[in-house]
Image (tube, rainbow, N blue to C red; front, side):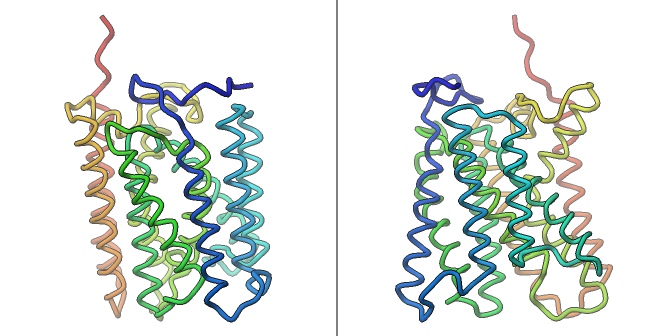
Amino acid sequence: MRNVDENAIRWGSRSKPAIGGISFFLNFLFAITFYFMLSEQHSILENVKFTGLMFAVTVGFLVGLADDAYNTKPILKFSAQVFCGIVLCLTGTYIQLFSSDVLNYFITVFWIVGIMNSINMLDNMDAITTTVSISIIISALIVLSAINTFESIEFIVLIGVLASLLGFLFYNWNPSKIYMGDTGSQFLGVLLGAMAITCFWNTPFDSNSHSQTKQVILTIIVFIIPIIDTTTVTINRLGRGQSPFVGGKDHTTHHLSYAGFSDKQVAVIIGLISMFSCLITIYVLSIEDWSFYDAGLLSAYFLSVFGVLFYISKTKKAPSAK
């Protein structure tokens, strides 16, 4: 059992409380309440998809809260993540890429588990996960705005969570006063992963026969930092014969620090990449006739960012202890 007085110690040398994620969940609930005060719906059960999302998000929040308080076993967290993915599938929120629902359900669960872990692993330096999550939510809001769903419950909820993240960023910016902890990262992992299915994976726009590449590439671009960081860490750790699931100071953010950037500069670099990728969402939505040229151009952007960050991870190492 983890000492209840123990604070999270991560990249920095100072210990800080890891309870910031509670505010995300409270704002999430407040946004839902606000929506039902203004809408004609009288019960959340009328919206099966959102009911499933709310249940999955609550499970993610609770398992994160338990991990922050009691340092739960990895198998419990993993089982809860899989459960969140299954709940989303059974309530209608799943990736629609294949003709087989079994394949669609499998890739959905894989996606949800992967994003929950990626967001959790990315929360290793001040403001990193916060800025990345802000850019992802803005991208989702851009898509929802493009199809005129300003009054949907998803739009209202994302606005609420975005507001809480912007407020949290003030205290999470280096030098931070508070962390979001697993409570926040697991909550965000479920929410962002599910919203990605609605807004990016299942792109709600008319497109041509190449629409599947559009779905995949748009999602990868929006989630560029979590995907690159997790992939880089996994490749490097497997190359060293280590488990990719054990924590360490070998993330892309850490290697940027080893390259000479301050913690604030690292947060700015990651934030700029995330926000530029967010702007690409507007470009993608403006394309009326999606082609392999567009797919190649955006793939080149992703591979360029991945190549630079991966190269830095291979060449810039932690200074040796004296």
